[in-house]
Image (cartoon, rainbow, N blue to C red; front, side):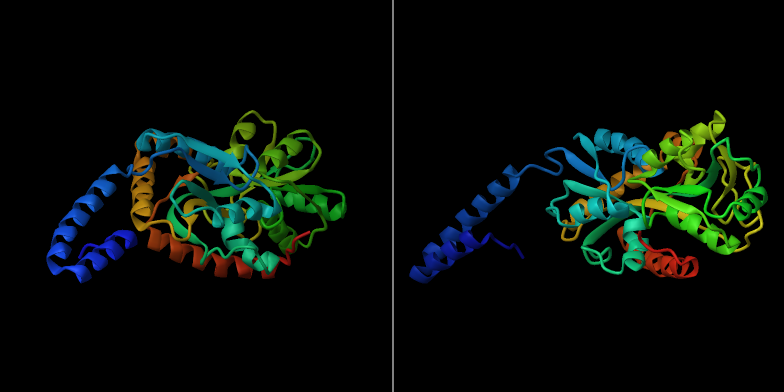
Amino acid sequence: MISLPPDIERMLCARRESSPANGVRWLGCALVLFCCTAAAQPSYPAKPLRWVVPFAPGGGGDIVIRAVGQRLSESLGQPVLIENRSGAGGNVGTDAVAKAAPDGYTILMANVAPMAINVTLYGKLPYDPVRDFAPITLLATFPNVLVLHPSVPAKTVTQLTALARAKPGQLSYASAGNGSTTHLAAELFATMAKLDMVHVPYKGGGPALADLLGGHVSLYFGSLPAALPHMRTARVRALAITSASRSRATPELPTMAESGFPGYEADTWIGAVAPAGTPSPVVSRLNNELVRILANADMQQFLLNNGAEPVTNTPDQFATYIRTEIVKWAKVIKASGARPE
């Protein structure tokens, strides 16, 4: 059954009431007008897309999104503009997309912090991560990595733990913001090891890493993609990764669990979501394009070289994953005692 636009439907009803014969003739004209109008509408996408990253440039997610966004631009035939909108642990940029027009031209780098962690950490958010978004696909997961400024005299997690216990309140750790996995990873370590360290939150992984490189903070549980180049040049000293198993990018690095903290796990993930109400065909188109891009061998190698594991799924599967992550991180927050500062 064809649904006509309301104005055409009203005009047709009026003609049908005045004359059945005229009604038939007007139906034919209405169908022609409707088809011509539909044919005249531009196909999606007809203009540039805006991909909001809710953190400052330079973090692990930002690195991945810029690479994927370039491929998406080539695939869609339209520019994909990356916009960094940091603040409140990712809440500012995430809320901006939640309130954007659901037309397929604004998408969000969904990050574990504003989409799963902050629900529990903040208690009340200006958006609902389940209700206010149309999931597109998961894109990548990657561990955080415990890195130190070279001036810190510790070469293992055991040595760092002993140093922090000997100097309570003197070691500082950076984070990409309250509620980020870089924050919770450090809080979980401090709780399990019973350490007193000073939290220094930033507006993203880039600024946090920059201050670690400058020696302004002692340590950082940074994303592996962002920290890896500096690990390779020895500008930071890596001690362990936060995933349950070792990373293919750094097989020599032990996990935190292997380093004396069994059960420790704090990974990061990113994906793509659009505002709730975005047309299903648009969501499906974006899902198909992103899944194809992530299946490309060169893109997979790029992500693996940067410490990220490419992962995709369907919109429904991603929706289920987000709900599961909210429950999972609620338990981690309770165990760590983390709170916004």
